[in-house]
Length: 386
Image (cartoon, rainbow, N blue to C red; front, side, top):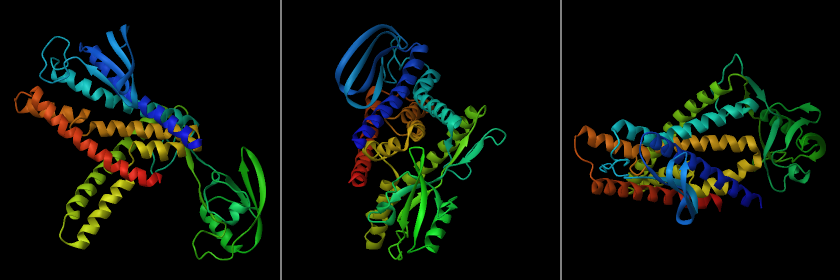
């Protein structure tokens, strides 16, 4: 049931983030004289549609709900760059087209900034050693040591300890880090000790008989643990939101570049006549698959885990995904916003006409590339889920 609920929550958030992205395109198009014909939630086939006489996107816009709940879209009049009638996207100036194409990216960045700012008021997870904050206002709050993993048939499991239980004291000594827990369990191996932990806001005590042997490296207690830190801000929360978004945007660009490099390098090496080189290439491709997640991985693995961890973690993940949508759509990949802008700019600089046929051909090639990439990531996601 938790998995199902996590998938539903994840699906709702993903659709909402994409709808906000498309809403950015639609609002900027309408404000610059380009006619919005349809705004859809999900992808066809259509389940329900209604034409609204007056809306934020203009007059007589068809709003639709569609059967494939994987995002949304906005359909503009005359979407090809060569269209020339009044109200057509193609008839707009280069600057107006640029604003329309990049409006979705900006909307996702703004969404990430807002979410990071809100979370900073209550405690933004500190996941980077040099994560941005304003020292004059923000404070670093250390959370109690928390169990992340409980091994099967371990002393911790037998004593009733569970994942996400905060560990407070071990045999009367305060636990301030994972290293402290490791040291104390090693010093008391084979002994029966009292462990104080928290659950649902209440302190509880349990007796645990530690293992005498750790040859399997599962620990004398049999748990994995972590101590989280959070950045809490007041007046500087919006500044922290902007700074965190900029910082994670750079890391996302960097990670995307490294993944693309490893993927291309792996493909080239995998067709080498040398067996050792081929194996190295396959490992590079597998590394890329392990480092990225598609719809199945996000909905089936990431969101259920985040949903169980609480609202703050769910909002943090939503901000990261919104930021990732902005970065991916900014890249010069045909069929995405950045690719369309790059293609339009390239033909403009060359002073050549971007015909409807040529544009559709380029978009089709880009779309096929994206489908292939999604299939590759999906196969990796299925492996993670299984």
